[in-house]
Image (cartoon, rainbow, N blue to C red; front, side):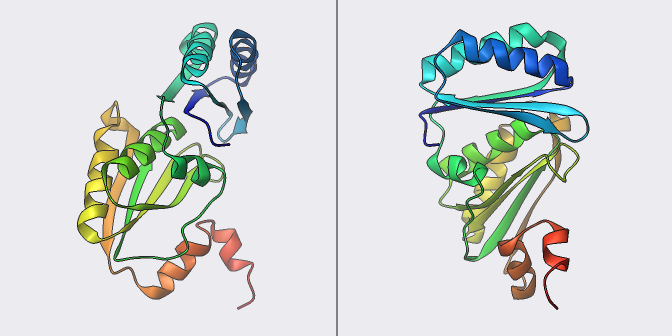
Length: 196
């Protein structure tokens, strides 16, 4: 899913989300559309395509859903690592530090990830969205301490409202045992189901 533009809308209503997704797909030629439910009873629509088409489709979805739109993001020139990370791609090696930005919405997480990786010499370890997080999102950056600090500051700085940030941290020299856990999977169930 390597596209020049990406947008996501987070809806408080599943019905409104489905109706808006239909309007989005009908409004413009979208190359990629992914939609579905997440906890706690919300609906996400992710689209990709040309900048003009994604922008037009996003506007249609927001207009149809109105107050059911909790949050949205539009990235006209999304960084390729953000697209890869959303698709499940992971960076296997820790450099010097780990940075974490935890947000209340998926749109805010994607925005923070894109801004952070564009503004600093870091890698995206993971972008985890909604499922198993109660609708929240996390982005994990890896790199040298100063670069990770910059990425986290930039990522937090693009959030539109203070309440979108749950917490951000930069951890220098993350303990190797914890890195092994984080690098493999942030879901606890994936870690405890392994053979001990």
